[in-house]
Amino acid sequence: MISFFKNIFKRKKKYISVDESMIESVNSRITKQISNTKAPSLTYPDGFDPEKETIIILDDSAGATLLFDDTIKELQADKSTCADKIQFIKISTPQAVFILENEMKAGHLNNIVGAVLDITIGGYAINNGRTIILDGIDAFQMIKNNYPNAVMRFFTSHSMNEKNAEIYKFMKKYEDLTGEDIRDKTFIKNPFTTNRIDMMREILNEICNA
Image (cartoon, rainbow, N blue to C red):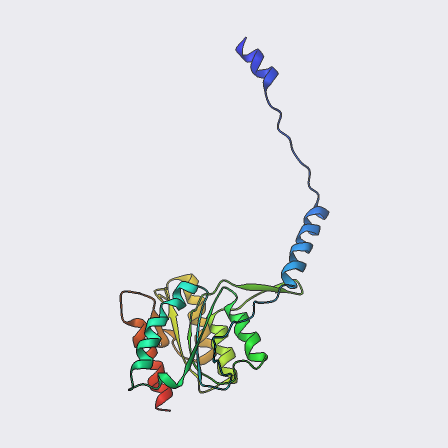
């Protein structure tokens, strides 16, 4: 008797047939939307001068760049550095490298003397159906191509262990580009250490003594 009622009230599963043309149509609309989306523009602080010596702090996380505020103030108050003569521009979004590229092309960043670069950045764009991903190594190359004397360091939460397949590809990419070991230019993100100020002092020392 129980099985009888179960059979009567048993819900029928509904299956929706989706053909390939429907999927292609949706993918086409998504691709077109992303392709037509421009990287957001950079908001500059009051008093910004495109010709003034500039250090870029680039990360896909706003929280990571926010931690540099106190570091910058401390260094600008320290007369043993040249930090008070330099402006610091933070770019903090997954589209950070695309923004950097656009702002350099637009002539808004005309005197980059240094940079702090995250390595793994999640932003991407689609151009002519191709997905383009730009990371910290790409940002390094962009700046180096335009400002060969710029002093740059990488700032990452990765352990930089070459046995880690995810990070090894970035290590190899940098080595192929420069012939150097990226670990010699890398500081690990850790709010409980002096890594931020140590890194920034290292950058400033090279800039000030150049």
